[in-house]
Picture 1 (cartoon, rainbow, N blue to C red):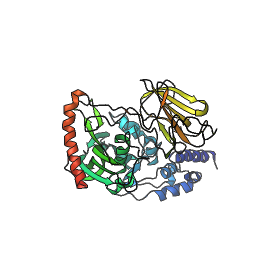
Picture 2 (picture 1 turned 45 degrees about the horizontal axis):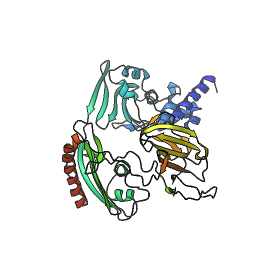
Picture 3 (picture 1 turned 180 degrees about the vertical axis):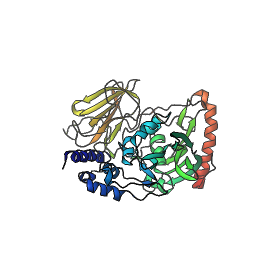
Picture 4 (picture 1 turned 90 degrees about the horizontal axis):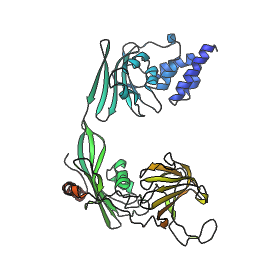
Length: 441
């Protein structure tokens, strides 16, 4: 094979790898086959946008120009952005003059909108024999960037397509699991996770405390565009009956924007200073026990924390805001992190397989930030997180320690009560009806 063809094949292989289709590397090594791949992968031009296989187009672009069929007339191509894709790659893959991209990037407010690509983004390109005619890129649910040829340059427009917001109420009864009950009642997985993680997760242990017969109701927004459902929005209020105990929460946002979050009807914050469990675990393998017999030594030795069994690699979260006091190897604890939360409170996380990016001594961390991953380092019989909670150096039971609430400030009490009464009344209507759609906001 001549040197120039060999170098072209290597470039094609590299580009094919970057978009994740390694089987095309073999095709790239033989220019005649590459041209055949291009013809097969390119459906006829039409009025409707077509999907494009970036890999096939990239490989084909390395073949001699004479071997590529010329497409006459405008061609509309719809590209779904993949991980690590760039506009440069997309333009080359679709056969559009790369110099056009440089021209577009000089237009005011366009460069940022074009270059911040996310996997899953859809870009629609129309071109005639490589000359770009138009480009459309959805920036958000309500905004689309539209670039079209105008004379010797391009016209730029931002097209707004606002969302309509409706409010829906649902009720569900648990027969097997929270998730299955929610889905059966028509509640999306997104909203179910908000209930479990952002609203009731500080008060209810969803891994161990959920029982058959538990019930929950939720009032939440739904987003529509041009009459079509887009996604769920904010949960406005919720009620959860767990083993006979009723938990209720309502969303509040003050007019000045300084106070926002979920609160009980009495104005106490649902978000506590500490997470009850700092990871999504499979089960509690060992509870806080001052008289436990150690599984390795066989001696009676106090177990001053809780062991959460979970697969290796499960993310471990900071239980509360604080500063990393220690991150490293710590004897029988193995890879461990200690966080100082102020007010003489510290938490310890042990047996990690590896540390999170935030786990550096002296670094500030926020509640819920990943500080490490479950492992079995140190004196451990299997993958789990050993978690300790200390006040003035004394170990406390993380399961039973009271978690302090944050309350609505006095200046916002009247505003909160007005909002909460209205929202909770809507929740009651939805709960009584079982399932139903309420009036749009």
